[in-house]
Image 1 (spheres, rainbow, N blue to C red):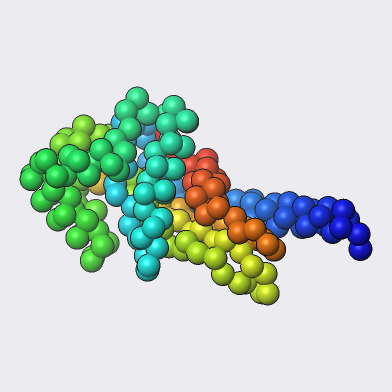
Image 2: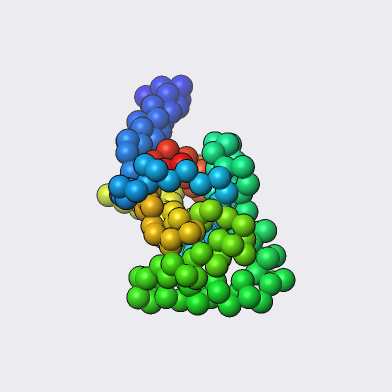
Length: 198
């Protein structure tokens, strides 16, 4: 095999592997009420990290805010960085969010009173929770991949009801050059947001 043919083969293989990673989400569930849910404002909560993927936090928070801004669905987006500043400056908001997230994580209960209060304090009709489940380079079935897996939950702030939840992952195969995980993450976020009610 000549060098030129080998390069063409690698390029074709890369395209095929990228296409295989696309095609619907791993998981997406929309509540029936979501058809009438059209929030104007959204707060993006600080990203939750599963395992030791701490380096993913900043990149994913920026990507999610950027993709939502590009959609122009919301008149105001409170990104995670802005929300963190609000949490530092506002003790009432900090206590309310801590209690809300504690109930959500421990007993899977989205407290409507706390949710409404968070919405009022952040001036948001809705909020989005994002989790990074996988952020690494690994080997799957003998192939080297850069893999990103995210979860999202979209809430109505007024009621605390989960309007949509989804999970998706992309494993971008490579031979020599590792794919940039933030780029893989952007592809994951773009795919997920297409299913998000608005």
